[in-house]
Amino acid sequence: MSTSSSAASTFSGQSQFAASLQQVITRAVGIASLPLGSLNVTLNTFNGEKSGLQGLDAAFSTLQSSISTIQAALTSGTLTSSVSDASIAGATLGSGAVPGTYSIEVDSLGASSTALSNTGVVAVTDPTAQGISSSTSLTLNVDGVPTTITPASSSLNDLASAINLQAAGQVQASVINVGSTASPDYRLSLTATKLGSLSIDLTDSSGTSLIQETNAGSPATYKVAGLSTELSSDSRTVTLAPGLTVDLRGQSASGQATTVTVANDPSAVASALSSFAGSYNAAVSLLAQYHGTAGGALQGDSIVNTLTSLLQQISGFSNGTPDTSLAAYGITVDQTGNLSVDTAALTTAANRNFAAFSSVLGGATTGGFLQSATNLLNSVEDSTTGTVKTELATVANEITAQKTKIADQQTRISQLQSNITAQIVKADAAIAALESQVSYVNGLFYSITGNNNNPSASATTG
Image 1: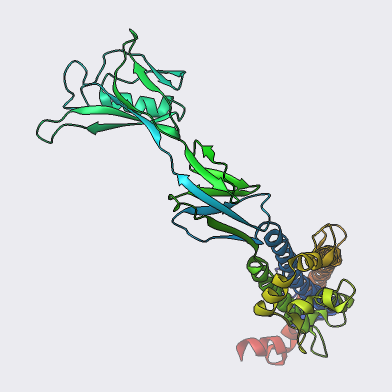
Image 2: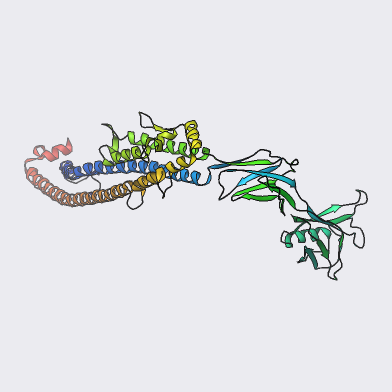
C-alpha cells in the first residue's frame, strides 16, 4: 500500500472498498484546496499590478532623464560660432563664452625657430646605425633652458626619439636627408614647438655644439577690434575673448579684418525638447491603457489619475503669462494629450529673445519649466518617497505575503492529505482483515453443505 503527498495520487488498498476510500481522500483534499484558487487569483492580480507599475516606472524614469538632457543642452549647447573667412581663422567655443561679434586681422602667422645638426665625423648614411656623436648624454638648450638627453644608442634615429620623449615638448626632432638618394647625408632637424625667435643648441658631453645651422623664428602677430596695436603670440591659437579661442590659419589682406560671430543657438535645446516630447507621449500612451472599463491590472488605481494629472501640469507649464508658457515657443498639446514641438516656431521665438526663452526653461534648481518638471517627476520617481516607487514596494510586499499564504495553505493541504491517508490505510487494513475472517468462516460453514452453496467457491470455480 502506498500514499502520495499529491491530491492527484491514487490510494491503492487491499479491501474491496479501496476505490471508495480513495474518493474520501480526493474529496477531502479537494475541499481543502478550494482556498488555493482564490489565493492564486489574488496573487495573479498583484503580479499584474506589479508589471503595470514597472512599466510606468520605466516610462517616467525615461521622462525624468529627458529633462536632464534639456538641462545639459541649455547649459552647454546654446552658442554657435561662425567666421567670415575660414581661410584666415577658425573659432572654438569653451566655458565662459558669450554672444558677441569680434574682429581679427592676422598680420603674420609667425614661424618656429629651427636648427640642423652638423655632419659629424663622417656623413650619416644609415641613421639606424650611425650618429653624430658617441656621447651617451647630451644637452639640449632651447632659449636658455637646458635639458639632458640620454638616447638608447648613438644612432641618429635613437637621438631624435630621445629628444622627442625627453625634451618636454620644447622641440620636435626629426631625421632628414640633405644629400641625394645615391649619396645620402642624414641630419638631425630640430623645430621649436613655440613660435618666435628662440635659440636652439645641442651639445655633447664635452660641451661641443652639434648644430651647424640655425634659423630664428618669429611670433604670430595680429590686431583685434580694429585697433592699431599689434599683438604677438608664441602660438597660432589665441584667446580672443573669455571662452573664445581662434586658430590663425592665414595672413589677412592689409587692413581687412575677419569677423568672428558668437550667437545663441537653440537647435540643441530644440532637439532635447523633441526627445522629451517623445518620452512624454510614450507615458501618455501607456497611461491610456489603464483608463476605462478595460483598464487592466491598474484599472481604478488612483496612481493612474495622479500620473495623468502630473503630465498635464508638466505640459501646461507657464511662468504666469501666455508669453512665458511652453506654448509661446511652439510646445503644445493636441486633443489626444500628445505633446509636439514646432522646431521652426521655437527657433524663431527663442532667437527673438533668447534671454526670455532661457528664463522660461530655467534650471533644475533655479526655477522655470525645468525646476517644475524636475520636482514633479521626483515626486513619483524618488527612490524613497516617490509615489510609483512606494506603490511598487507595497505591491512587492503584498506579493511576498500572498506567496506565504499560498505556501502555508499548501502545507496544510499536504498535512491533511497525509493524515487522512494514514487513517484510510488503517481503516482499509481493518476492513481487509474482517473480509479475510468472513471468508474463512464462510469457508468452514459452506464446507459442510458443499462447495456448490459457497459463493466464494462458486466464484473461484466458475
